[in-house]
Image 1 (spheres, rainbow, N blue to C red):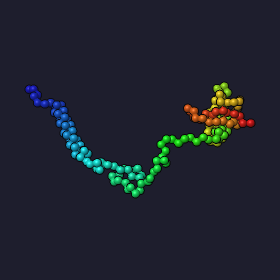
Image 2 (cartoon, rainbow, N blue to C red; image 1 turned 135 degrees about the vertical axis):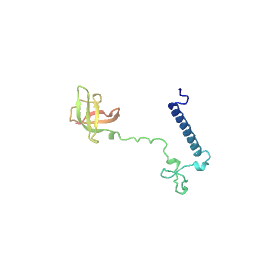
Image 3 (cartoon, rainbow, N blue to C red; image 1 turned 90 degrees about the horizontal axis):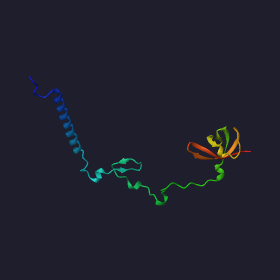
Image 4 (cartoon, rainbow, N blue to C red; image 1 turned 135 degrees about the horizontal axis):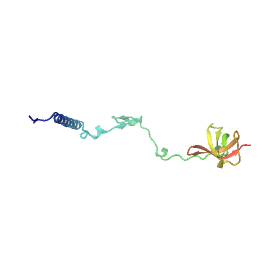
Length: 151
């Protein structure tokens, strides 16, 4: 005798489809109930208080601060030209490899290690000698320029 009705697998699939349809209908009805299209502009408005927090009530206009347009800075401030003598630093050569042509100077002011290349030397130097130099930012950190031995 043949099985003319639905198999168990088909019944399960049909139950899952019906459940999905029901869930989809419920979600759609829920979205319609929570729809914000019927709200007025005042109901949708949010305000920012003096501390930067959102609130539903408008801020008190008596507490507002007056700002003049002349006091606002729109761009970055201009760099102040410094004295060229301030740019020259002193330090001690902590490491120098003549064969490879580089070394490091310990800055006396900031105690930082500054990279120096043999191309920036004006005279031969050795380790533990005092030098004067200028500093620039390089791709890997601070670089020493115009390195001169202190006599």
